[in-house]
Length: 206
Image (cartoon, rainbow, N blue to C red; front, side, top):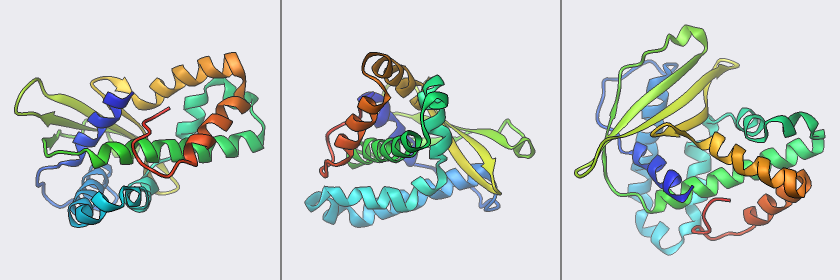
């Protein structure tokens, strides 16, 4: 999981591309990553002294474009249907924080890589698309990083990210399912909440 999170950050180094409409899902992904990278570069000296500030940057710039309810529902699978409203709310909050911490920790270790946005194959009119990127490294094979987005209330939201065919949410779903079956949903939520209470980056994903 740590390798997966680190690879996701490689998708932040984007090459220049023509301007596109703000409601274009591919433009949304590119413009968001460009803003995140520019802010990261500007704030790097401060982040070296206070790395926990990366959480606020990620929350402000990147996370508004993620659908955490959809991601939580998929990550819990059948356990979502069995959960109470209170359990669902607690899980969404805890899972959101987990993803923030995972992404932010990897972001602090980010090094420049060339990333190319590939042509969009899907029709945005369908309400669901995959924005495909390819990380072209100086050594080794290219890495495929794809963002899956759907249209919700007039806004495009990311509901999964895959790296070389490995789904971030599906990866969590497997481990969560095992833990819920062995210890129960409340135990999983409590563990995620405990991890969320830790302030320093570097603890890694669950």
